[in-house]
Length: 381
Image (tube, rainbow, N blue to C red; front, side, top):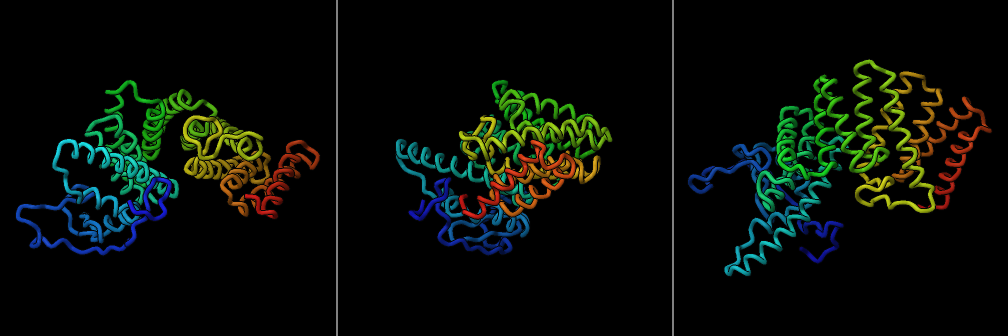
């Protein structure tokens, strides 16, 4: 790895991040060699040519998506892994493999991180290549059919689901389910994610009763792994609320949305105002921990809850104001202070109108808005 400034995965950016896409010249290939697409496995029609390695893809679109989605950040590392000459002695080969696998593990984490971020942004066409490379690298390290591959299968399922490629999503979910059935020791976190994606798949297909059964399992496993009040579990409650809303069962839908709002209110206020908080980027199961992907998912959930509350009870109802307030706090946690101030100020108008200026809840919102303005003024963020 270059001595340049490295990112938090330990990789410096490629010194020469240039590429061009050209058609495959079959006459220039060795006899009997058929180049396969890195993403689909079908016969490649184009080449992505870089200073470090040449990669093959089925279409120009596949090549461009792969470059933008992940390759532009890791092309020099991929090139080094693929072009390294094998050591001669057994000890040297073992050492070389150990070092290569350590590099692959870093690449895997980076690919999974980029795929997750692209999913949150709704850029599923960019998430798919990053998830594919994560799966390829995991397979190189562990082999086929291993439990360690399930996280990549689930990420590919989510990416394809977002891109509305339902057959591909179901294929990856089925693969993940098969591995989990064979490995009863698998974590509840994996089982939760599997069931949530099955639920989202069936909901997308209009199979809401099937979706609800899987989402109930999701909430069960998430509660075992993280706790029933964790923001990860709130995602299951949200999807169940969305299913009930699609079934025109408004009362249970709003009840689940209420649970989502309550969890995010407790979590965000804990992180923003408690004297001792869990660091926002801390991993795993602490009830207050929220990474960037969780925060982004929370914003999308709360925006949808606010929209549904406006539809059901009106835009000046206190329930709508509550969703607006908590959404503003979440934007504040994400350091989008202008959007946060806009939402909290709007919520305060509703609280004053519905509860009066002296009500405890109105005073809480007033204090939050004042603190936010002070933060913006003194730049203490």
